[in-house]
Image (cartoon, rainbow, N blue to C red; front, side):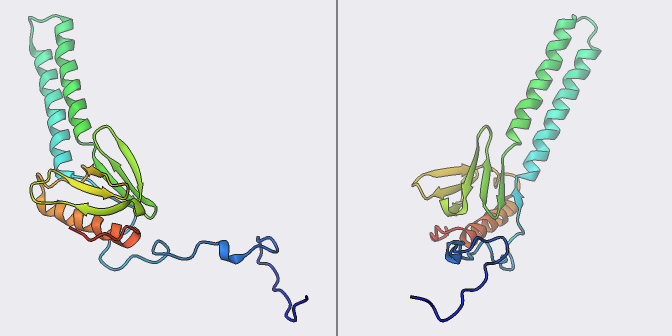
Length: 182
């Protein structure tokens, strides 16, 4: 049976006979973010805590290095152990300053002390920061909870609450979990 209407010419770069319905339908990721959401990509991190930790590490290294150089009755190995201890302290404090949460249109990368995990928006059901929590917790679609140490209320409580609300709003906008926010 032939059709009385001619088939439209294929679009440039598209093979004839390909169904246009296989293209993904526009979703919330294709729409501009509502007013009030941070622009993506965005990184959440405990900036004050990070400054305090890194400053303390540099100060520790400088102090131990100065002591090692000012002491006259110590051997070279003892001097090296002072400086090595300062470097070790700086390394530990730098590791403690590592946590962050990187959000983009595809999802969230949670960087904790030693672990980095990539999550799609649909995997995040809820963003929680309850009174007394040391950091944000993410309720995930697989039934588990994940700490996200990049938002910590310890030193800058209001900043952490603002960041947690922004991350929650992003998860609700871009995600498909649709769980109620705490």
